[in-house]
Length: 361
Image (cartoon, helix red, strand yellow):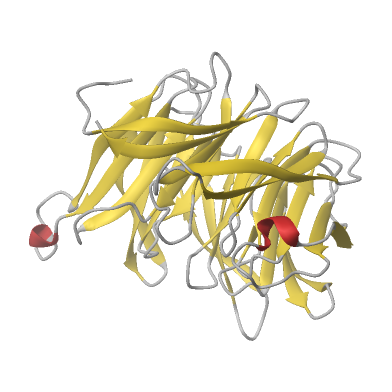
């Protein structure tokens, strides 16, 4: 723990249960639920509620385990914006979509609803699915794979999905997909060191409108700023880049962060807390077992002048080393729910899911 930093990461909960490495964590956007997926082919769900120890304290409990039926590792999970549907992408090349019987809309339905049921199995990828994600409207689902493709599916009533496009822009394994927080823009990152941005042409199909080059090695993770004007990427080259939207369809690299000694497998950009010029908090983690939390700030003062550096700065707020002991950390994610913007979860090679809170030092 770095004592000279303004904040520290306090361990709130340690959630064992997976028999093999935990690959990803995903917070339900509408209910007090956290999900994790693993090489043990399962998805585990946890509910949380205020504990008896005070207003800020939370108690997490295991609600259930979904034995997904996938024949290989479940690599990625994503909630639909409604919080009622969960997609899971597997190394068996398929994507399963899960819904729960008797889903009530009550705040506490983390624990009371029925069993999860697989409502659709999406087949199409030729090999390992690496990442899945829902668009902000919930009407589109994207998946990407080691087969170098990105698939976009339209979500239709009664758990029906129609393929809207198979994008073959990358020359290597596609590691991650991430939807813009409010527009139908999709980003993908790849082993070919590039980031591709896609939009839908109303008269045609989905197409790549921009390639962001600059990383010197695999792009592992992507995360949009909450307002959508910036995109963060992390790489095997030990850097995090922040790309700014300078025109409707043009993005440029404006900031490079260094703070890890090994591959940066996962990043997450949350709303954070603080002043209005604060663009949020960026959490980064990876093979060195370290979690860094950066405060990203835009300096409005400089925005009108062309000759200054981009008006963006990053300050390291908090850091914890050995967060999962000696193990790699595969995923970090901020809680998207109101009043929990200081809460993040991680998943590691030790099979554990951990929940952290950013607190003043």
